[in-house]
Picture 1 (cartoon, rainbow, N blue to C red):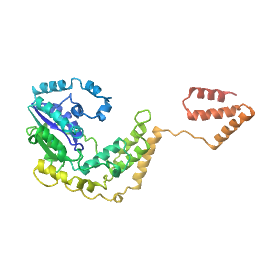
Picture 2 (cartoon, helix red, strand yellow):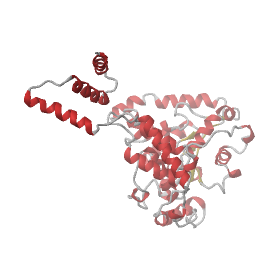
Picture 3 (cartoon, rainbow, N blue to C red):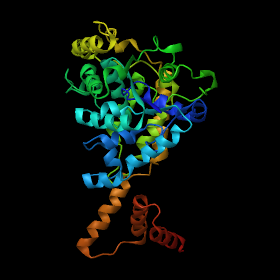
Picture 4 (cartoon, rainbow, N blue to C red):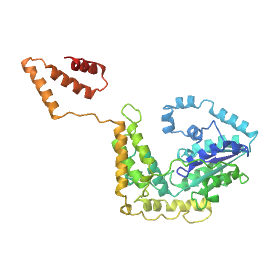
Length: 401
């Protein structure tokens, strides 16, 4: 059985594509295309996690902090993968494996070579498909994702450490490592551009690369697109929410207030105004111009930068928001806050008089009067509205003649 290994890159529609593939799993299986369970679904991230030698968010989310814990977690993994491949080979001619983390996590020659040895032993052939997107656009998309995850800085402060030799962004270096491990003849680079996709659709373009004989009309195209990009206004509102409401509470639980506000912002069509603009976009494009040309010479067969130079950022002052929309936005956010944090009455000037007078009785040894005790207990009820003892005593005192 052959293998089609889709390695990304990140921010090239991978989440949508993977979700769609598994939605059509039965229809693809009927045409000889197999998908994996052992490697995780819908992203086959277990493969990159197994061959990645450094600790990352996968390890943290699975409570893996030592090599011994990782060995226990993946005990028998290779045997399970080989068994799945052997079972699938009885009725399928190709297995599709897809994980953008293969691009972002496997960064050393040794890691990629280890993966190559494992796959070439398990399949009759392995082809690598990878989509490439212009780096400044990738950075903007990553910024949008960071805001969704809790980042509240401006885009100018995002990824300031970018340099032209970074594995993540230097496609000539990154794809060169895969060529060294799998052979250039087994690599199939593609530009992430709807204008050049087969039928203008990433899904069809990808499956055409898997097998041109696949009957596209037998597939379901109803899946919605996850990870829709943020508008400029949504990004600014989410930044403000992230700044005031951290993603996690002090006890480690998710901040429910942040989740409510974030959901309202992301689901509001009224807030879909403007596009995120990056004042550094042209600088980032120029930073990778030389490596992009080197990538083209080695893998695309020409000397030109494969990505069009982006337009200069638009003037943000060109976006106007009608007053009634601003009113709706503020009302929606205020309502969400009020529902999560009901406003309790605070202390007033007369409450200060009660507290002062009761405190001064300490000097004379006098006991508080009943009215003063009731006033103090009412203040206690504001601080602890569900306290049973407080409510009981107030009921007793107020019910007396």
